[in-house]
Amino acid sequence: MKPTGSRLSRRWIGLGVFLLWLAAQPVRGGQGADTSQAFRQARELHLRGAAGDEEAAEKALELLEELVRESPNDPLTLAYLGSAKLLEAKRAWLPWRKQALGEEGLGLLDQAVAGRPANLEIRFLRGMSSYPLPSLFGRGKQAAEDFAFVAERAGRPDKGMEARVAAGACYYHGLCLEETGRGEEARAYWKRAVKLSPGSDFARAAAGKIQGED
Image (cartoon, rainbow, N blue to C red; front, top):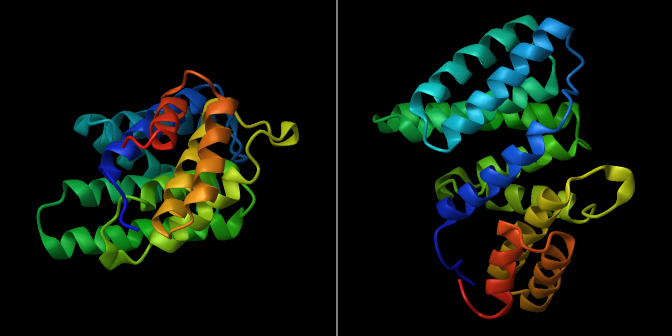
């Protein structure tokens, strides 16, 4: 089944909620205090860039590249650098440059997941960054797997997942299920999204899907 509506607009719904979640989260990369402060700044700038602030996006990329040089094996920093590279690819004009940046960004996100496969923030970030990509990148299945991984853990107290993010994972997992013709399972996850975070952007979007709206 073809997805309805714009994948890109759905991504912006997710990034707005993701930003609210991240603002309350401690840095889990294992860096020192100074680096943690720099990482928080880079993370905030990147999310502002994803919302359309090009100056913030460029600054975030510079900071993240510097942080990766200092801590080349930190999965969380690698994940955000990968996402920042994908955002830079979106801004690039030349097709070969777009493809090169896209492949580099995806490689960094994959490296981050390989280093910390159970980290929900990293998995959700890879899913959110990969989902709107053109089909030529072949990342639809991977994004669906990341959303499924997070959605299956949504609402579990031991995972410490903020309710709005849990609802977001369920919403996106539902979209992926719908695209493969699994409508009843999709509806179950959308209902779960509504229950997890009533009144949130994701809950409203999920309610619209349940009612047959886009």
